[in-house]
Image (cartoon, rainbow, N blue to C red; front, top):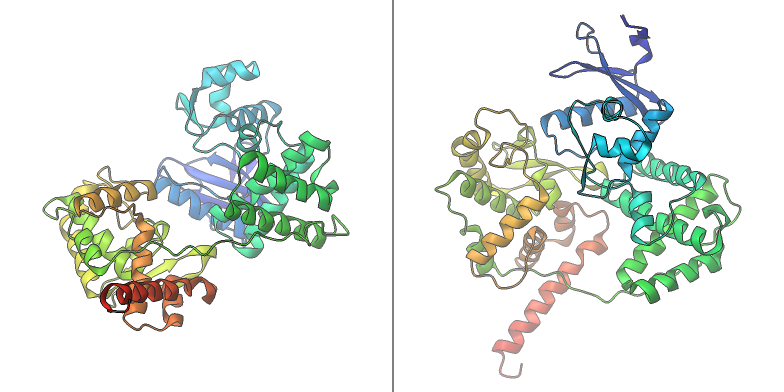
Length: 444
């Protein structure tokens, strides 16, 4: 079916939205275009194309929640003017707002033309997060990456996302670390990423420690990122050697996770005022978090269809898109049921959302908002130590082990890929036993 001069068959998918039908085009492993089609055109499923399918899923998530963050691999395709507009938008600092008129002055265009290139009718352009190349180069006082290095980083990040299924935050960390090295290498020695030698890597890490006071954990992550990048370059035939092969991560001091006593957890759970809709929601979220040991990103991302109150389990899509079933216990299930019955309709006020936990505006709960809620309720409960949502995850694991749970079971419940990550909680329990011995034993 034609849409003007376009042929619908050229699209990988057509998605029905409330205001139009959207056509999604892809090339290889990238989304290259999303266009408005005639309302009469019927929606079509993706044609055996993973990227088009993911684009449909993420666009639908955006339609449900305007704050949703996309993590699709994109390749800009358009006129010279559109590319100039998009490049100008990428230069907007994180959290800053600029009008179309201001962007137009930067590129010698008009506000109307800039608005058309943005594909929206709003009068404001906002950057939720600066591009990794621009933000990294800017924060270190260096020039932006060369086109060759930028494309190489795109290829590296796309490979990690498609082949390893890494989480978005992990991908951003890898890309940021390699971007910093590329910018430093270009500024100091005028060389590209693929021309780097082992001595360059050592000097860059030393510069990070000496000039930027990088901590051992940060340095260790940089070593991991650089190793991963040059392994990719070696595997793809872009280099014949691996300059990062001999890099060693610094030894990290063992730091035990902060936890709460069972009495402190009880005080925290009872802090919200369940006579209010928001208090009832907060109680249900805290109960769910402590009963299941979810990560905060997993908790705020739970959909109503993922919860089975009959079986008292939650289906979670965790790090690396790994799915697991997590039990939550009868207590948490009862609070969720009460929240869905008494509070959620009042928060939504007739609006539709597939998110289980929503804000007073009817939008899905965010990590930042829930972090603030936890801190406020901790203060109400009289808990003096600084805590975060992750503290309840630590408490979940520690209390299970204190009561005799098998380490492998705790690993499965937490969704850890490696048992060594879970073993830290045995040290927490051991330190607790030592503290009790010192306090109560006459020879302690």
